[in-house]
Length: 427
Ligand SMILES: Cc1cc2nc3c(=O)[nH]c(=O)nc-3n(C[C@H](O)[C@H](O)[C@H](O)COP(=O)(O)OP(=O)(O)OC[C@H]3O[C@@H](n4cnc5c(N)ncnc54)[C@H](O)[C@@H]3O)c2cc1C
Image 1 (spheres, rainbow, N blue to C red):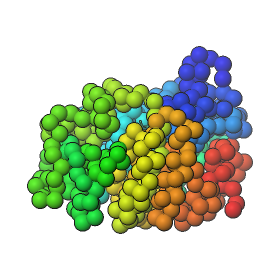
Image 2 (spheres, helix red, strand yellow; image 1 turned 135 degrees about the horizontal axis):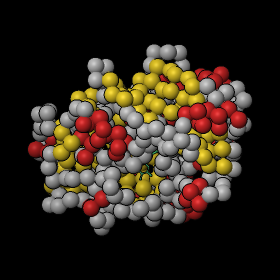
Image 3 (tube, rainbow, N blue to C red; image 1 turned 45 degrees about the horizontal axis):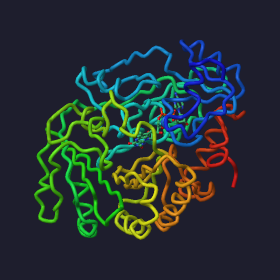
Image 4 (cartoon, rainbow, N blue to C red; image 1 turned 60 degrees about the vertical axis):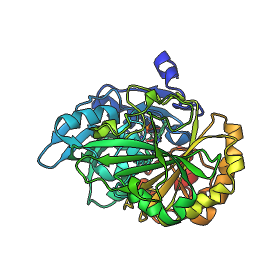
């Protein structure tokens, strides 16, 4: 990589992965992108570099779509928007909100690109909310021969292509389903004993539009419970339940104790637009650690949530040595082949680790051993050590996905070693 611009993008956001690609390009037009894809033998698309492993890397060319025209086309009658792949959710949210539309959910960070998020089944929380990829109704992508291909929900293989891990080509635009815009309010509660979950986990996570649970594992308790309610829905009464002994935080909070809350979205029950409450972090701020962190995340069936948390509790003395914070969220089941939520209402158990890979990896292995009875599926974009054959066994459609990738990309132009290892190589 030669230019200063490219050198600045040579590592992922967290800095723990250096891209090994030979070249990084940012075409300014679709024609330029198509020519680049057609004439290079190895190509992968890069989003906003927020993944924590080598999933996005390419042995040849890495290409970003951030330089393509960034117009959003809203079809109000169909409640859909055609969205540029490289656009960040923060920008998209403001544009669709101005037309009276919203997305049902957002991830914790609005800085990530739409294509990158949907390619990896990025999610927020809420028992009724699917991952962000479930809003995708259509994809436009540049395929291996440089042609522009359009696929839509209902077509053969579409459910395999949405959480596509970058394997089918360079997505240029996505059609997203929209919902009517709404307001929400967010409140943070502190200190709920873990024992409460034994009887009330389901009531707790069903108790609001989006509920996020945090623990630092220093004691058997949830340090914080973030409750987001829509203002157009009746209050659930969750926090008035006798078992809900957590206390309202007297001021704004960051999930990690001691970090300033200035980077977090507004709390204390102040109503605001959906996109200013659903993410944890404000678009104009970096999370306080500013990249000084590593992430792992495991999805298990929601019915196994409490047993999985109890298994982790038994390892908490080791976990706390490298942990900043652990977060538990819920995600509704979907039908997307490589989604970790395929066919199963799930919980995600997320770990923000300190930024020390050598110290973190043994604890990641320990966490995976503790969660093994619950058949965890790791987040595609985060740090994990699970063996490829184990991973494949947890995706009932993984063989169909590999066959679909070969049909679209017989020469393996969009492959890389991550895909070979975890998805494409025959067992
Ligand atoms: C601070 C932080 C908070 C996060 N919070 C959450 C969260 O709340 N929930 C959650 O689930 N995850 C979360 N993540 C993970 C994040 O959502 C994923 O890493 C996501 O993939 C990032 O998108 P990106 O644009 O940075 O993708 P990249 O890391 O750049 O790429 C990821 C994948 O997307 C593919 N891709 C990107 N653009 C295209 C394209 N145009 N065409 C085809 N393929 C493409 C790449 O090839 C690669 O395979 C978080 C990450 C960070 C750093």
